[in-house]
Image (cartoon, rainbow, N blue to C red; front, side, top):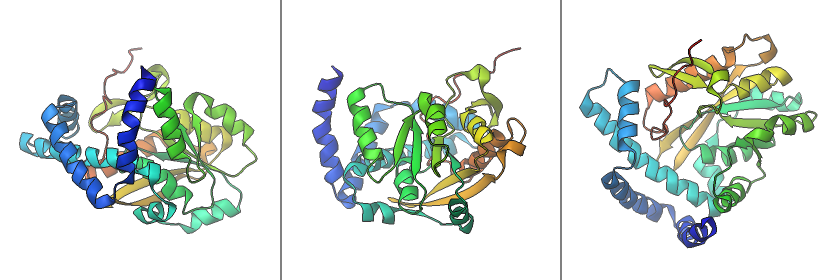
Length: 290
């Protein structure tokens, strides 16, 4: 059944990937109408927005919800577009703001941990980083349940030299690459699989578990931690702003790096809420007692 679903869907995905951007966004506008009328996860989005911004009126929340679905449709089609997007377009559409300390870090043969959220177009951020720096990029991911779609996404994500590593293999992979300079990227605002070992904090006015894997690995190897802020400049154009969160993780207290990351992400979401993944059931867990 998984194979049938994939082979029935793939021709449409391929056609979308071939569309010029102007046509792609016309399709996105039509997809928005369909998705909005279907009510897909609208109650999840509305509740997440209400709880995150209790100071906003119901009208403001509704407007944000609509804007989010418009953005989500763009994001879905932009991700599919990556399948056939040439290198020069990838360079132009997602630009990294180079920093002198990034160059020094590479020249000093220092590997780094990248932390980012489901904010902006995180799928374009990988090629955006890989094509604008000398760092070999390794992206940590959770495999999709359908192996055919998972293989397609793996092919898409590795087109410009990026490597990907499944979440459960990350420590073994990093030990094997310990003598190589690299940048290992985590989408660090996902719900942790083990909430009892998560770092708990207040995020967007809600009690929230935070995945501690990036912090633990950074402290173990003493790799600097870099936050990647992916800003949407206009439709189909993004810019990446790297920020150094911790230069010497071994000297940090437990939870300090996770807290710094979540505060920085919260700041960005508060500034512009629309391009975050509001349709994810982020707050489905309660803090364990005792």
